[in-house]
Every structure is written in structure tokens, then in C-alpha cells.
Length: 81
Image (tube, rainbow, N blue to C red; front, side):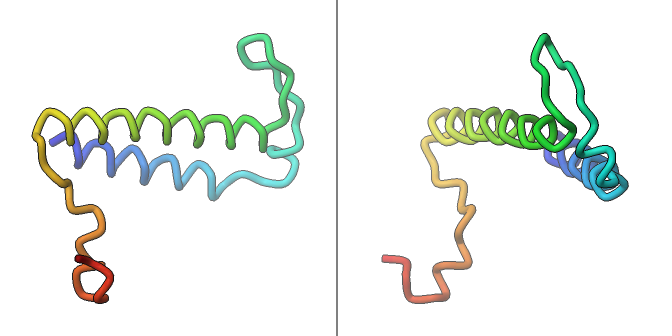
């Protein structure tokens, strides 16, 4: 259920990003007291999401005490031990 919701959210985010124009990315903004442009805001959001995603993955691996097999395709490359 949560994975599907995350996928839907990522789809929506991709749709929003695909509609951004150069002018949107260059527009000055003030977000939480910081002066940034649209592109800087996008990078900050992506970085922030990545940090929280990493935290969720780390906690999930620790709680399950298991490999989440994100790179199972490497088993076919000869790179896996």
C-alpha cells in the first residue's frame, strides 16, 4: 500500500517537473526565509526527499535485519559474491 502511494506521488512529481519552463526555474522565490530561484528549490526538494528515503530504507533494513535486494540484477552480472 505505501509503496503504491509513493509510486503515485513520484508520478505526480514527475508530471509537475515536466511542466516547468525556463522562466519557472529562474523565478526568484522566498521559501522559509531563504531567497532561491525555482531550480534551487527543485534541487532542495529532491535532496530532502532523498535524505528521508534513505532514512526509511536504513530503518527498514535494520528492523527486518534483511537485504532489501535493490540491486538483485547484479546477481546476473558476475559482480555479486
